[in-house]
Image 1 (cartoon, rainbow, N blue to C red):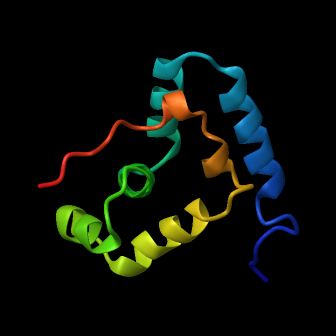
Image 2: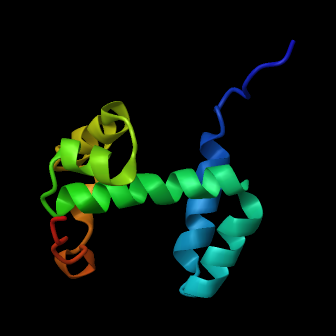
Image 3: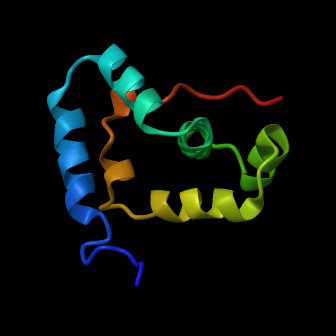
Length: 104
């Protein structure tokens, strides 16, 4: 019977995280992700990161939905994750946060 492995890929994701964390080469990481992911997966990750950046810059969910053409459900997930004050998104240093986004 086909199914997910017992760890549901957690061990592989930890290994991937270690590999990416060890690399300080932005070009390598970009090329690595391009090769590892399908074009749709690559675009999806980029879209999710853009949503998070716009939320952090103060745009409303409806503004983001209109600008990016994505569902409110997808944006709500990012918003919910940003509310976790002890989560990884909250630990991104302020200097790495995106600059304020201009409103259309």
